[in-house]
Length: 354
Image (cartoon, rainbow, N blue to C red; front, side, top):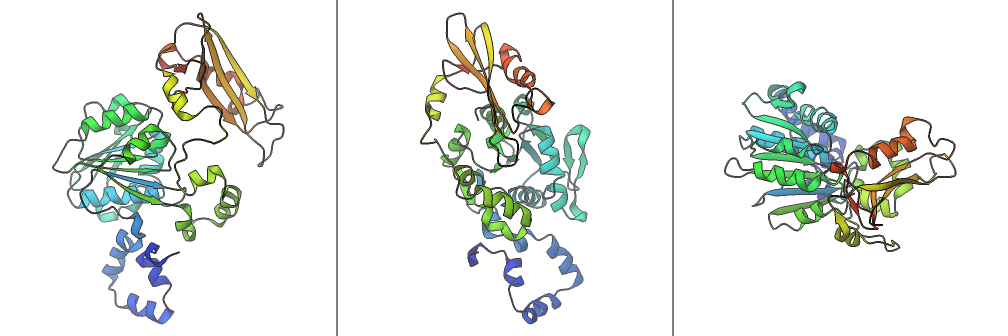
């Protein structure tokens, strides 16, 4: 790791033992306790919130970089400085907000010292700090819940995986209006959705990039051996490990722009819905996924792709188990009611714009 990428803690750990002991022995018990929760001591430089004039901090980083820790520590810093009084925590699902942003290993509760740890009320989707600051939890599956509440601070996690990215972001922006300097931190592994590109190109955005490789010393050896060795150098690895935004596969028959141009928000009455399956022929860790696509035709002879589902199962497992049944695919993607369907004439146009 380059020197400028190291945290202060890592730099001290690399010193000769005699020098380390001298530094640590000079600290009082109170200073040692405070050091445990001093994010500037433990963070790498690109894990710290930027200085300067910005409204959005977009942290595009690979899996295992420490994005959740960055988000949790940024919220904590805003609360302790008095800059955050009303906070929105927005995740792909309600479970993600709870399990990652609040109760996760690097979530807000974990990074908060005992003397300033918020009280979490799951039934109210609320965190309350000793100084009166309040954070509410929101799911990108229900963007309309962001109507009404006002905030001075927002942490948006994994926006590339939001079900309704544009609507959720729009609703959040209308409420991000309290205080003299409202700000939002966006922590995500990138995917080439329009919202990520829009925030990336916004003049009010400060962009920080990072890769999985910067945090190898804190990752499990099994993760390094299995995940990195399997995906390093692949297209998926470039996205998930190196945090590159990959627009189009050069071998694709349809570009993403073609899909976006043909997208429609409503479909007419459908005469037929068909579930197509491209099965995997083996069932082991190296097997390809089974691809399931739900398509439809209307009375005018126009065609719509309603959704896609990918699962690691073979033909023998098809139809058995809830994780990989054709019936489940049909119910989830093809017959949920016309108000949730999205289609495009002859091209792929899924609900989540993934």
